[in-house]
Image (cartoon, rainbow, N blue to C red; front, side):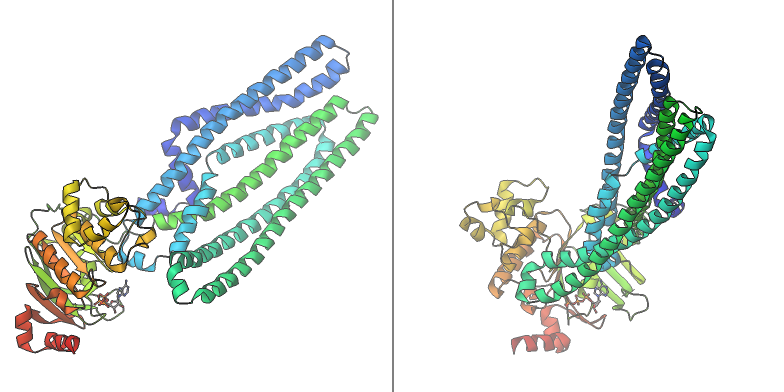
Length: 581
Ligand SMILES: Nc1ncnc2c1ncn2[C@@H]1O[C@H](COP(=O)(O)OP(=O)(O)OP(=O)(O)O)[C@@H](O)[C@H]1O
């Protein structure tokens, strides 16, 4: 069903989405729209009667009656327009917000593979530019097409009935107008799509530059950014100019042909009045009906342009929403209670990030037990963080099993699994908020507990030295803190959580040896009934680990506690000797 839905034209899909959530509003709007267009069609007849019967017949009473009727109908028509605008605005704004939320929610369900290839600037451009276009696009466009079609049809009927020969002249010019407009419209839509895609690429560069501005300055890579930014900007400016030229050409042609139509009506129509084959009132009414034919036809073509532009944006939005969720949230949907977690077992696990590449992990067996600290050691790129990614199910394995207790993690509900795992990695997630909010997030934590954790993680000294203490704002991505302070903060946050599985992936790398040892000792006390996994290049961090796995080239080559591994005089011993020398 979802597959079929995804294949639908994105505009139809979006309109169906609006329709499903606004059935009543759409029905009321439809009735109002038909009423309003009927009223509009009466105006030329009123004009004709005012000119020919009231003014031409010198009838004051009739003139007053018709003018009052004209005024009342105009007010009624304006009121209906206001009510309609209210409905349209409500429907389209709510739909755009719903669409944005479903895109953001979907993003959080995607796999590590998607996150590894993500182009942030492009996504921001979709969330910003494309969503802006969609905010201005809604069901009203369909209503206006219906009304325009209906109005044009009735106007056509009156024009044929009133003056057939004059109508023929008008219709030929009208056809020229319609054909030229629709050709240029499709060119505009193509060029808009091109510009939008290029704009996403520029947004990527800008995003990369802004979010890394400090490193850009430090590494003197500003020139490189500016070069590729300016190259792309220059190209897009040319495309924008071409697009603007086509748009203004489109408007100019429409104006010119409309002027020809007016000349034809007044020239040919004036001639007919002089010859007594037409009245002045009829000429004015004919002119108004012609407007009611041309205006709606052009509106329909312009609506088509808007639809094509919205389609480009909707295609880009739905390309994210339809991104396949590779990691199924629920296979068997089993739930994991945090008090139940006793062990994590890797059984013959093999894995590669890309199916055609060599395996990163080669049939490895690991066991992490509750109440124990297990360390992973090995050279850079041997697959330590990959093991964490697999426990968290950012990727699913190729072969083998990962069990929590006796349950394969693929049989667990994904959210329930992840709720039980806290990872502190090198890439810290910090909010531009206070120290307190960064530690507590949205959990309810007593001040006493918070103070205690700050003490254990060595944050108290920093907090006491700050005028605002815990309420000090740390800046975007913690820019106002040192590397070590950021790590302490992330550790404090993790220790406050109720997670039974705690993973530190180079979580203390920015701390000096003494601070690191004292933090690790303190942590051990707090996490004594949890599964603790530590990855560290500095071997002193894991001196006290209950079990150390030494990895090389995706395999476990040694295992044991520190003393056992030292006695083995193998890989671990070699690392230790290298570190000491
Ligand atoms: N998202 C990814 N997509 C493709 N390949 C990846 C991805 N992440 C890691 N790799 C590759 O997988 C291998 C193992 O990486 P991993 O991060 O697990 O190593 P590590 O042992 O943690 O290294 P380090 O100690 O340097 O952090 C590396 O060769 C790396 O290039």
